[in-house]
Length: 109
Image 1 (tube, rainbow, N blue to C red):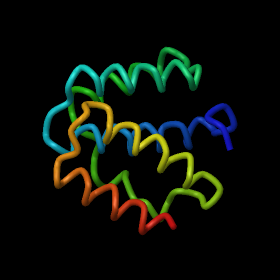
Image 2 (cartoon, one colour):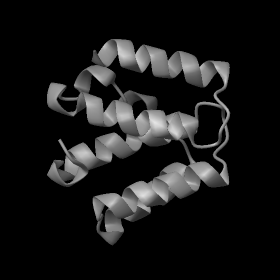
Image 3 (cartoon, rainbow, N blue to C red):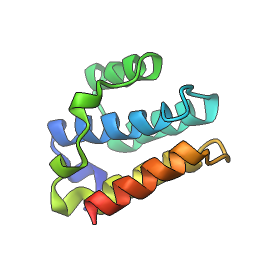
Image 4 (cartoon, helix red, strand yellow):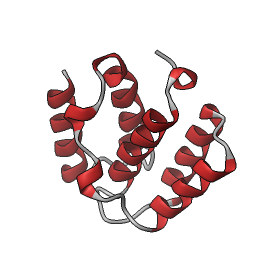
């Protein structure tokens, strides 16, 4: 599965997950912002969807919109890969980030 195969709603879902992990330590640093912008570029998102990412960089996504069980089975590895990239983006894996990643991995296995 590749980023280009995701539907618009699946792309938004992935971005919400990745952004939620950027916010796991309660701050979004430049390396995380850069990673998100790179992801937007790799996805080839239209301007409207790119603007949603900017909003999520300023305010974390609503937790009610982020449920690992909603990730389709065929996309789970892709989501896990992108979330893992975000956790590693700043070179520091805080305890909360590691716990969230382990939980996400367990729920999507």
